[in-house]
Image (cartoon, rainbow, N blue to C red; front, side):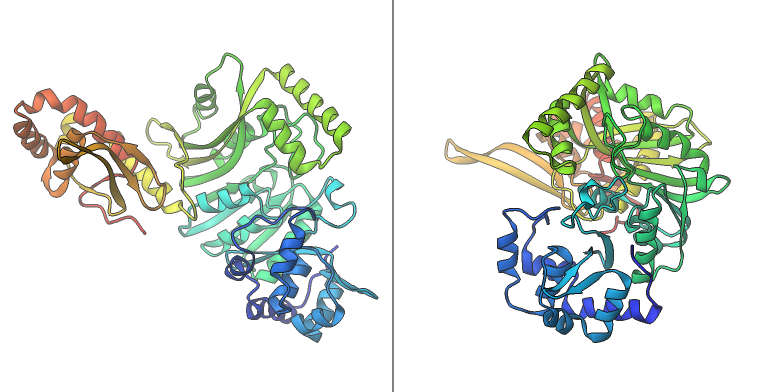
Length: 497
């Protein structure tokens, strides 16, 4: 287990890694945009080739990312004598006759350094309390999370502490909880390594450690796999189907401050004969929260089982077949046909009737988009307050500064003719959709200088008709364009870039 270091020793380790370039950009420049596998495989020779130059960065990548042994002298040159001794004492690495080998994986992520289990070490991947490194869900939740000032934030199921430490930068205090004592020990070490004194770590199940408190922000990357047995704490909740995800979003609202957000990454099931959106909407009835669900993927049950077994069990042929049959038998018994993965944002708003919105996460969305989530909630509020068309017609609009128009043309009869037109947002949530000429003509008139009713009157005159004829279709279209952020109220500040 890891032994905490003195503050100056933690500081020395951070300085060593920074000086060597052992951070996101340094890894990208050395290895390229690749995903580091959990176990040594056919990719390892290539990664060893890319780190052949003997720089301090190459040594740190081999040691703490790839889990490859390095010569003692190379480790000493990369780290320095004092940090090397401190690292051995802390349990980060060990020295033997054959050289130095890492006992943990050190993962750089957005200015953080995170100690997690080194999956290549014997027995680690079979541990029930394995502490996972960065996964797709880790990054998805980090991108999704709002980064506005918070008095108190809760990170439920903190694992290595990554979400808590990211939140620490914009929160006065962070409460990070987990049922795994071993995970909390890793998180405590990482809190010292990253200099996060405002993060408090507490052991406990679900929301129990947070009872009686209120939070401006709750984030959770929980054990959400839909699996037949509770084999790994990071993966399996022990509740049937998606019961744990439903429990989280049901129990979170009373712990939120008014206007506070709960943001979760999770899986949910598609049951035979049920509409998945109707089923999920039922989770939030009476919650006192507005809800936005962004679906990222859906897999048929068999493909889903194969993915989780492959990525977390690493079985041989006969064992893989047995596990797959076990998972599929479980799904058949529960009536599960498919499983979706997605992001859920709940905002506490208890004064009026609440709304639930479903979208697909736009293709190409990458990097942090928490500002776009806040904007999406604001825009939906704007529309909810103007349900009557007469109220919307009095407003003035402008196009989002991140909006672009792509047109495809074909050569016909001696001229280029527009074949299709697509609007797309270049930043944040990168929604895209096709539009026709009438929609483009309406958008051209959303210039921030005229009310919508005046824009419609001008458009009607240009089309040789009256505004009453085109208004219903145009208003329905405009509401969709506003909701997705293509069109903004003219008096609003531009959203962050």
